[in-house]
Image 1 (spheres, rainbow, N blue to C red):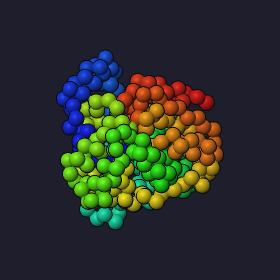
Image 2: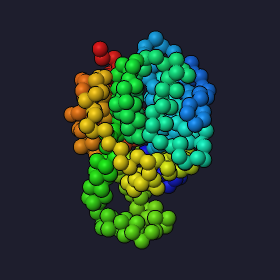
Image 3: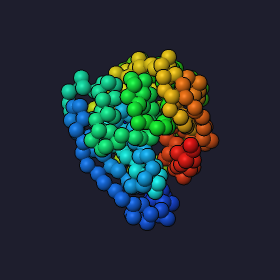
Image 4: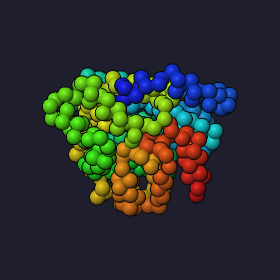
Length: 321
């Protein structure tokens, strides 16, 4: 995920109105769906959680991106709650969760421990684990640490097993953009002019190509606003999506993927900022059954760009033995 202050303002009213109108036929079904929310204690403070549905099938626990994007952009996936509980939560440092100012607590390990704390608080002995972007990193780290008891299946979207590999892929995307994009971008970075409107405009061009290729939904706008304020994003990631200088910059679990044996669905977009090789590395490295799907016309936020198609894909995977 990324610093989306600019995108959060881009066509907000028009895009939001169009998406709300398109979703009107499903509002009645969502209104009748059981819903609960609350706070749970985790290392460092409290997180905010939401649960939709109450079906008898294994709950789906979602891990949002960022770090710091809040859960909202994933809410189109609550359509899956007609068959099972679907749980979202704001990780520490974003959204409605606590946001301690002590920067030292924002670590990968604390985030892993947070997943266990959420599962304990909500009684989630068995789950299907879903992670998107940073959430995919968190899911992989969680399972590589042997925390996978009760995790029946795994879904990874916009996924990476290595931050250095992802950074290299993003640099290839930057190098491939026209009109001297890379030279302009890196020139401003070297000159210390990353706070200028010119740099912001170049960053936006990257996002429009590789992060979100449609107008943001209202739920996505909430996540973008949360991300722009998130201490977790600044400390763990850095100033933007492709200039990663924070805690996660050296993270790499490529050699350990074989220890993950759950049946896994890997999803990505044709134009994903997390490039195809990152997803292929995961597919080829996992120790259990897996398959990968590339969604045409999508970039990083596939569930926002094509929510119905994405839910159908996930629903089919969940129905498999």
